[in-house]
Length: 261
Image (cartoon, rainbow, N blue to C red):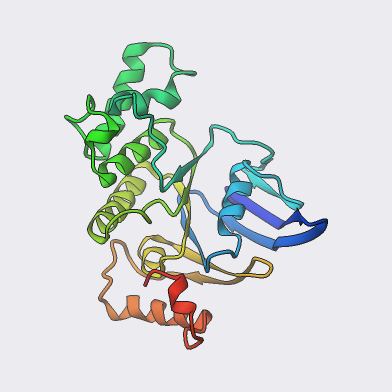
């Protein structure tokens, strides 16, 4: 018997007021996500990807439709779901250990237990020995790993990632993509990734939702039938790139500037 979807996004629309006019940002967004999946939402800048992610996380309210997490309506942020941004969000006056402990302080009062869990996830992301360093002493890639450890330490059911590796150089981005897959395989955490990096979406995702804009809407779903980890130079990988290229009509002048390819 098929398990019910962990995430249900049902006919979500979002309007904003501008100069006394309603501007529709999202229109009738509907999809589901199963437990343990990695989903990418791919689209040009301004198509409403981040707005949709914020609605799924309960940080913004939809104008129409709703989102269900484990069968319950999402009306506000909750500990089952956490957002990971590209700017790391680390507190500069806290060490790596104390940054990872941050989300645990409310629910785990025992200091030893809290420290043990934090150290476990610091080890998981490959930062053992750096727990007493401060963010300014770490590279950008290491700071993002601290952010991942902090997110995982809360043991959420869902992690939302908004362009998490966009600020990193290519080598760090590839390394962290591999780390994310390794960690996700171990933790079985469900992830929804917003990106405009086509290769990143193909490399990480079980399914890709392609969004078009004005207003933002799901234009197509692409299921990636490739085993992980994936070879970016493989012909099958290039096959999916070509499918996505055609979706965005890259023969039109200017469109290439909107994507990392």
